[in-house]
Length: 107
Image (cartoon, rainbow, N blue to C red; front, side, top):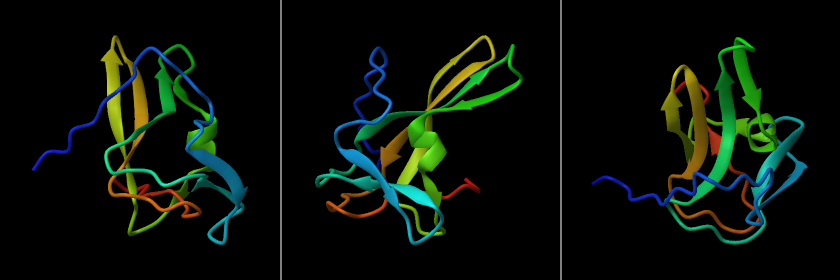
């Protein structure tokens, strides 16, 4: 069953109200739920590929999200035009307040 995600393509918030940055037991600092977050929530952009820079620009979400082999979030390419790419972080399941948000860097 495909998850229904509501994207907000015209609004950028470097650190959405739903999350905060705190010290992580995994590595350095991480992104944590500041409140309960439902499954399928688009928390915003993490990485933006800009061809003239030849690399990805990481947003605060992209810079502080840590890896796990059992992630509770995934990346979705929300914009793809003329070699520009925008990736957003989406919750895979409900996340409890205080829980660290995690991605599998290999997928």
